[in-house]
Image 1 (cartoon, rainbow, N blue to C red):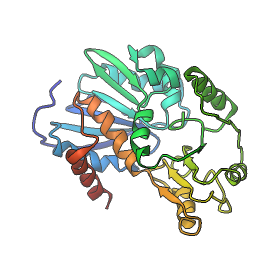
Image 2: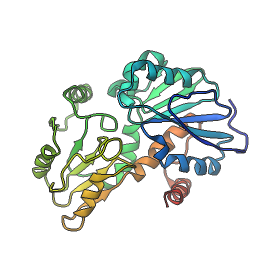
Image 3: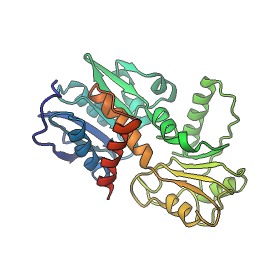
Image 4: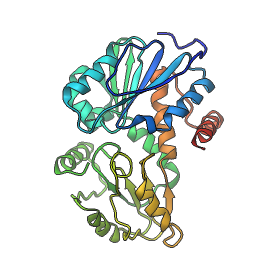
Length: 301
């Protein structure tokens, strides 16, 4: 596989399961509606800036909870196509690993622990699965770590709201022998989340790690929800209606909130996996990182 050639023609192709052999180094974004993702613009600029070679990005759109044979077809295609170095997996992280675990030659520690993959890569003829969220979330959280956190969601980025997923999260935490007190609550209605938020201590972090506002309409809280004083509100969703982000910003000044959107999480998440696909560590701090961040900001406008 050659990544050293100058970029001649970088293309963006969004498909469902119209999988065809790549003609140049091609990375994939496995999600629900990938054409709407900003990475389809940002990747082009980053590839030029870091001289990644003659390459492209394609989206693979899959409905939620896709049949196992379809997940296996996608993973098998990436594994067998010589010019397809890997894929970032968004909404389907848990289901894809559940249905394709035997197809991977190696899983990193987080993928084995959490039962999900957000990155599919190849090295020395081996198919590697990794869960990168713990790494990228830590990078994005560093600047504003709070005293306590209320995580909305039990799948995907948070590890979705069902008893089965809640039990899965409990199992992950038990294997880590965490000393931090954790409470698990099944909240079938947004008003249920409002009630929990009302008893959070000041300075807590409220995170939207559900698909609401991105893959599904609505929000995991109601407009009447009261954020704790000096609260931190963070919405992982990076496109769509972004209702929880809107709700938090509407109360930002009155309730003294610190509101974070998806931007840094998005940047760190993609830089980590792109570096893995091309066997090159992309900068995550310093001047070169600032340059990539600026490039992405231009694409955001």
